[in-house]
Image (cartoon, rainbow, N blue to C red; front, side):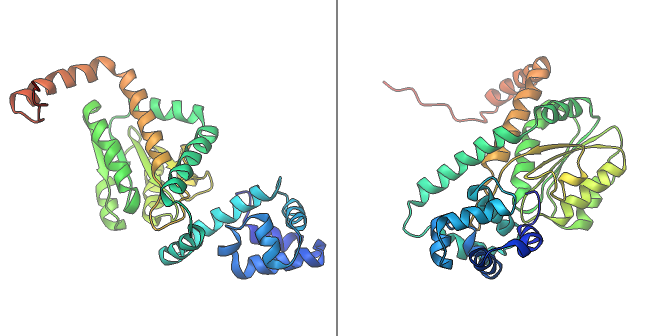
Length: 289
């Protein structure tokens, strides 16, 4: 978001008409509800026409109401507590097919991620990982599964992979204290942003290590402390964070890295297949008559 919508409204408030002032007041008092209303519903709630709501959005500098609504929703997701997010989700999902709504929402996040992620930063991230002496993967709280998933596969490709999922700041620093300028850190952070992740990225960068941030905004605490930012949308309105888009970024990294280290990875898995077969690691499908 270019700026907090409250700041935009404050800067434009002197030019508001009577109807626009009513919209302004309602958003200030009930922004968690307004963010998920259509222009028509917001107008009806406030007592103005839908066109007045659209003009209000344009007055603030947005291309239209959908852009303003998205800005409000991003603000809501950054500010609300878990309980408040559940309450808003209950209101917005009332009488809807939850399964369909969530899956379509995730599909939209993938589309928006594809449109916004930098191919240049992605390529630089792949190069940085390939050139690193050690790889530190940092993800805490709900981002911990992302770090673990990436680390699981990178362990097949590289000898020095450190997965850091400790949510305590002190424990996190104990695990990354050895990072240096020859290393790379891949970190994950999404709203509500963990302060530990931002501090870890800041420390990693201070040592000269390359920091690859996978987050939802260049302006996020992690984005501001990263050399390369891979943007992934995760704005799920519920208790749970949507990790579909960041997982897709991870999959793309794994595919790109394995392609660049094809011979080494093939040799590793050739050995592993023999071990898995000898020790019966995997169940075999029973023969059918």
